[in-house]
Image (cartoon, rainbow, N blue to C red; front, side, top):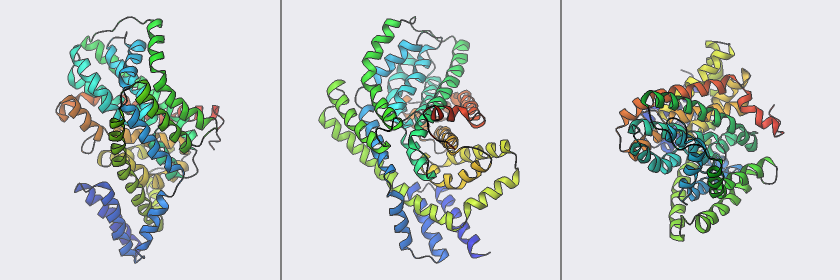
Length: 434
């Protein structure tokens, strides 16, 4: 075995073994990088240099701000407002509370950017509400966890920022604009699935639609929705960079949560900031280690080898696109979202581009695949949170989620094979998408 092949086996083999042994993902990435560098005979200080280089990015400064914004707004009393707004809009339908759950997730995801936060915040309110209205508990949990993935696509999503930084040369604003229609497609597909099940099980309808009530609820929710407008309009309009808009949104979120909705006092603010620091420490350590890991992949020419391997199976763009989705789905079952984006993007993006998939479109595909992975065992963080919130056995929740997996896969295939779903809004906004 030649030295390059041996080093590749050490890097990827040790990483997979540690993942199977349930090592914390950051340690698995860092240790496999260390073993690989030792095998190659490279100076170990290169690891530190690459780690610093990995986090030395102005764009990445947006990540802690977006996470902080999401935590402040998520704990600041806006959940009830968004649920009421969604109820005034779609609660009249058969299975109305399921539809409310899905639409509220679209609104809330645009503020928190986190599927876990969405599930924990909205799920704690909506799941008991749905059960009291006669909905099955496992169905209610399944709707909650699957709809939470909308927040990964709808801006401001810090995972989009991580992807843009990892892919290199991609506009964060273009990615933000690209997420709206795929998020809506996902929401509609979940609503169709929910409606079919609701009709079959005769779940109740809500009150009739009232434009007066809708306007009233919109007025109460406008302060929360303005946080998203600050970010998206500021970035797309060229007024702010993504980092600047995120910082402004944090200040705005703090003021709204404390003084307008009054869901937080100053003691609660400090508690929220503690939670942010815990999350950020994990994310930034992972980004740093992944930069060193990615350097090893580059030195060993792994992206080129992976591209050759995938295209050797078939040169048909449809088959290659399906293979890319399959790889990402499998990775999503065993790894968390951020490490997949950081590690898989440098390997798979060149393959995607070789068959005509735009980098922005591929970013949406990566995020949605990872979102589906968050709902699948054995490492489905959102699945675990949903089961815990609902106090339901995980295996029963998985069984209830099966129809919704089909809905999500249908949305994924549409996004994969209809590029304009992802690219139309960035084009309208004037971005050069290549």
